[in-house]
Length: 244
Ligand SMILES: [Zn+2]
Ligand SMILES: [Zn+2]
Figure 1: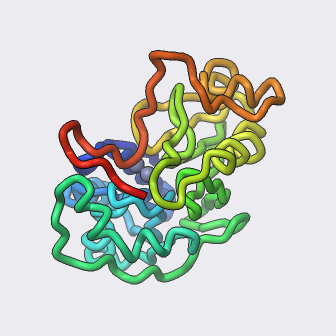
Figure 2 (figure 1 turned 180 degrees about the vertical axis):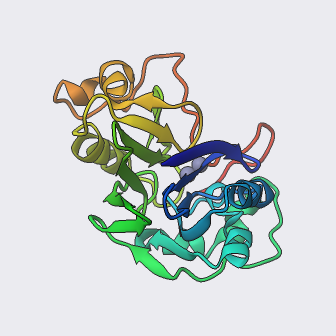
Figure 3 (figure 1 turned 120 degrees about the vertical axis):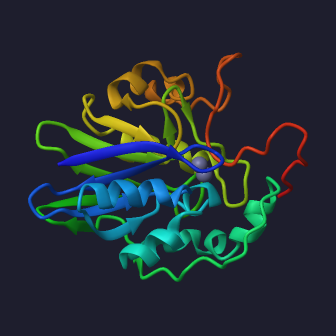
């Protein structure tokens, strides 16, 4: 299986392309921008993109969706809980001063918890992990010798997704991480929506936001001083605060 992850767009969202080596069928997860780079990889490897999947509908995970859809004819997937964000991409982008010309293309099929999206000889399981947004999902799949998790902006290396944007919910993100992600094998390789890769076991042991949760408490809403949260839509310094 081919797995390629690279940062795209203004907020360096991790876009991941995964392909079946036998059939060349592929999925693209979170085409947040730089569609040319994504399409170069697709063409260079002679891939047939079957599905474009979104971990959630913050604009930094979606801005390359139209171009990838138009170039490949892939079907678009998003959890229905994030429809309100998907319909409002222009306003989201305006949070950081971006002006969008086009509306987002229609979603072909809503992602359902527990469904498997197939490509070639492979498939990825959809885990509904609300909290960062209501429709946030993670994708889990077997790479043969190891398990891979694409955790979107729910779980980062040493941090968790912010919950102060519209639809965010701290209790829900902690419950999602506890019941859906920390239950995975320690060795599970995690590619988050931003920043470096990690492993489930490492986050269970070291993530400052999760230590109270691991011990059975309500979860580390108050992380130690000095830890930082890399994720999500971060208005740059000097820009207006996002309200709501
Ligand atoms: Zn993000
Ligand atoms: Zn986000």
